[in-house]
Length: 157
Image (cartoon, rainbow, N blue to C red; front, side, top):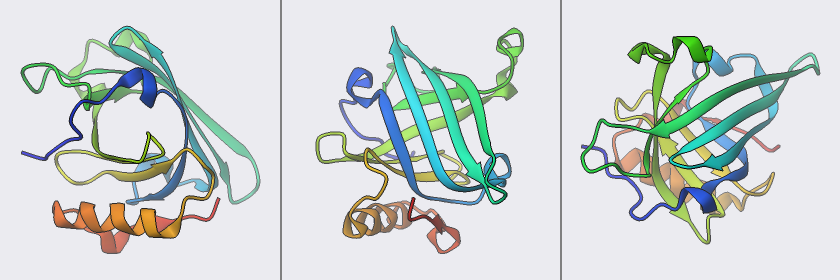
């Protein structure tokens, strides 16, 4: 099983995060820069707003929801699933994607988030440009967990 960050506090995790690096994925294909995620804490869930700027300069936004996953027992605030499909489809399991908080650096200043199938991976930071050393450390940690980090897209937001 993929290890996660112990003792995650979702209230502290909430707020704005800036993407520093990611594994390529189909739903962010159009994102060229300024990739951000905004999380608003609610009881055992998060409202999610992702945004980025495309190569043509236009902004793109997606809104969704995050919740504790029942994939592990007991429930673990580091093991979440997110949905960007309309709420009326939320009863379908396939609209929910794994969002596991693998590691948090500093005082919730940087985070490594991925999926247990190792297809999805993000390095996030509270600041638009994180210390490259911290980003490298998180990428190296992901590699030690079996992620194919050679494919990572890195940014200088």
